[in-house]
Length: 310
Image 1: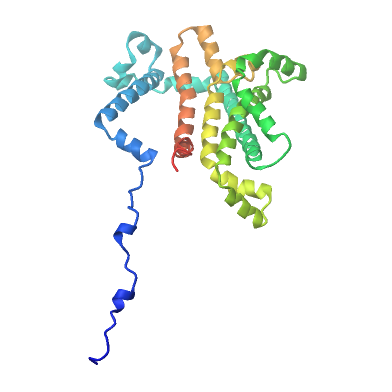
Image 2 (image 1 turned 135 degrees about the horizontal axis):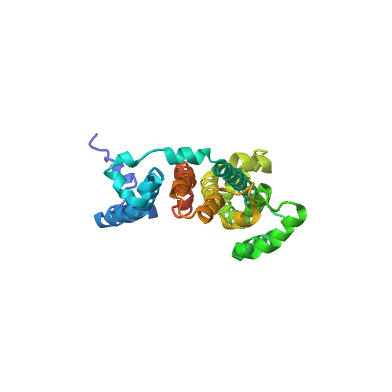
């Protein structure tokens, strides 16, 4: 009807003004994306390629030398095998595995490295969780003592620990070498895992406790899965340190319990430049840590980058 006024309903609705809205900024690129962009530069890739070649060349030389006869190694450089593959054979490795001393030393290295790594990771995980999330008297003071042990050099403890092991019958045995590595590996391991576990949101642990989860259940079903990158990184570091160690084993292991590093050092001292034994033995000692590293490299990278990216 013409007598009624027309109501503009659109006028009664609130109208959002663009000027009232805060400008939406693009997300700031993280550290990983910035590193990826920087590494995309061709010059940087060329430099990294050169560095990789510098590191790979000695490894390739050792591998080729280990598959050449002692006469060929004495007469020509290892690079000649690239153009003359007839020089390569597995005779050195066959002779190496027939040497009972070397094979026993290899298994001694395994028997030392695996338990020393497992014990350090297991004990440090329990201690790291306790220092991060459990309340007990003297927690901070004890943790400060653990951190202070990081500055104690291994060389300081060699003589007193050797006397202690001699008194209790552990000197010159595999358990003695394992115990020494565990004792000196724990301070860094506890420090690393405590700091990693402390970054886990408190709300997750409180929710687990409200659901009736005890501390052991929280540790096994929550802390360990979330801490897998840090645990893998720690396991790699500890395994490489123990596997490549010669100082501790040289002092605490006898001829029956010596690892591969000490056995190769003894071969060099007795027979001089015995390339036919030293080259395959050194490559065998090197290839195991490489296999372990590449098997856990995904977890290792996650552990290194943890905390740098939010």
